Amino acid sequence: MAAAVALEVFGLFLGGALSLIDILLPPPEIPTSPLQQGHSLLRFGIGLNSTASTSLGGIIPSVKVWNEEGVFIGAAIGSSVSDIQPGTFKTVEVRHNDSYLFQQPTYVEVSGGSDAVCVAYMAQTWADGTQLGWLGDMGRYCGKEWYYSSLFVSTKNGTYK
Image (cartoon, rainbow, N blue to C red; front, top):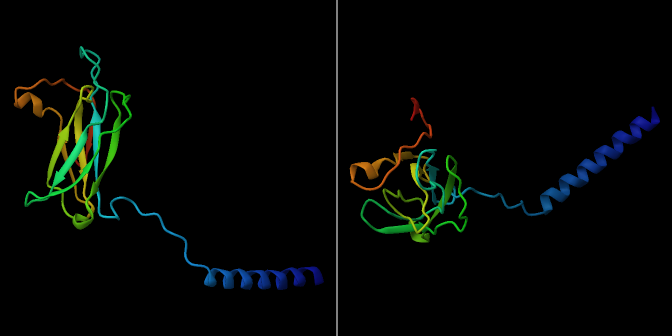
């Protein structure tokens, strides 16, 4: 019984000392997401098609964004990872310039290189949580090279292929 009382007293002392230490120390840095810092995200879905004559994987392109007034607000330099596989996705952090944090990047420019990926879809998330998306078959309507992708794209109302 005396041992149990001694343990309780020790626990109270230790708990009190730790609480005092917690008060004296500065709070730890809480990591924040790029969205909480005012930046945006752009996810690239990489095409998937076993009959395509060339590889649909490659290097993630560079991205530039502008606000609704046409003012350049930020960019993401292309990934140095050159082996993004078909049928996968990669999310890129688009860093907004300091004076344009939390602004809506309503215009997006995507620039590919010599080994650019085949984009099946792009999904953009703004700092305020707004989510937008595009399918990669726009090249077809512009008379440019395109491939059918058998990659499924999830939507709030179901799935699109």
